[in-house]
Image 1 (tube, rainbow, N blue to C red):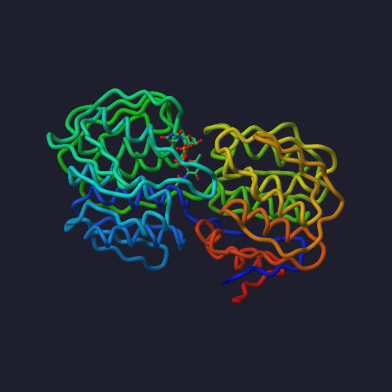
Image 2: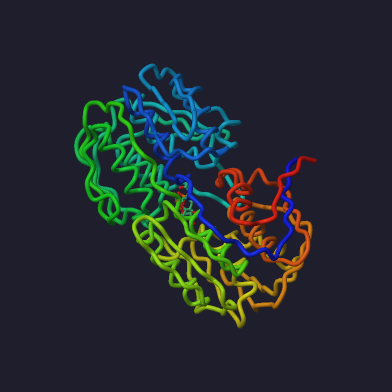
Amino acid sequence: MQKLVIRGEKRLYGEIAVQGAKNSALALLAGCTLCSGEVRLTNCPALSDVFAACRILNRLGCKSRYSEHTAYVNAGSISECAVPEDMMREMRSSIVFLGAILGRKGQCELSFPGGCELGPRPIDMHLSALEQMGARITEEYGVLCCECPYGLHGAKISLGFPSVGATENIMLAAALAKGETVIYNAAREPEITDLGNFLNCCGARISGQGTSTVVISGVEKLHGCEYEVMPDRIAAATYMAAAAITGGELDLKNARAQELEAVIPVFEQMGCAVFTYDERIYINCKRPLKAVRTIRTMPYPGFPTDAQAVVMAALTKAKGTSVVVENIFCSRYRHVDELVRMGANIKAEGKVAVIEGVKRLYGARVRACDLRGGAALVLAGLGAQGETEVEKVCYIDRGYENIEKYLREAGADITRMTG
Ligand code: UD1
């Protein structure tokens, strides 16, 4: 069992190169299943979730390997169409393999992802969309069996909510389907744009990715390509919050301001100076932090639910009262109790959390309960007096590449320990 040990109250200063985007890389790796030639994904982050996706690809009979931020995947020899339960459990977002495997093989079997750290994770929209495209889906003892004896065909699909995963699954399934698929009320997250662009690079015909109407004209075959995974906007927001809570100054390389339009103003309200140029974000937080207007998590381009916990960590030390409303997931305040153990004054009930800024946080032994909540505890540790131990680092490693290395290079006192 690994933990991060942090001695806080050190100002962060310097440059951090932001990693490739986890959520994009996972969808792209699933997309490789559709391609007959070799795909080379560069800027692919070294994360446990990425390695889990590569293991799924190998299990399916693809040849995949990972070396120095590049994933090489050749799905020319894909033979299997089932993902075993232990692999599904390892990474809940593996549900995105459903559309891809079905699209390539005409059948797919995987276990129901069930609940996860963020509460129940229903996939009704994914399944209903695939059924509209000709899939027959049955569920027995938690195993989903999907087949399409007559192949997948295009359909006009209206999503009741702009689900990221459902939009990705439909795009993946539709890329090789017969005819045209239109997704109305599609998710507009930048990772959807990245998936559409990647599939087009492999020969797909997709337009409208990044808008609420995505049109996919099915093609016969997809080929391999080389593609660079987009930068991780949530990792960028996390490092901005790290600068804020330590009163520091960071220059983030590979950070796209246009993808953080709902997040940057929150840091400005806190009193940080933010300058954006090229693919960089410079943040300077020398003044004491101030509370902000109500933050409501929303589908993109609204404030991202994935940035809620890390921004909350910074707000624990912002003078005044801040309010957060979590609209996307029902169980996304599990970091609150741990932040309170460190001296934060937060009351969370249902969707709403009220944060009264405190002068000081104090080091404590705390436990990560999920990926972003875990990162929030690391940030709180950076801003706390004394020593903080963050246990269950495995959650943080799912989405942050070597978090302690980047923070240490920027002046943090943080070490990974085993035991
Ligand atoms: C993705 C991201 C996750 C991010 C989330 C919202 C990946 C690997 N994960 O998750 O980091 O927090 O988008 O930006 O990309 N829902 C249903 N039925 C469905 C599908 C979703 O009710 O069939 C609900 C979910 O329970 C949730 C909401 O819709 O309340 C949003 O979920 P969705 O956008 O699908 O998130 P994910 O794709 O799971």
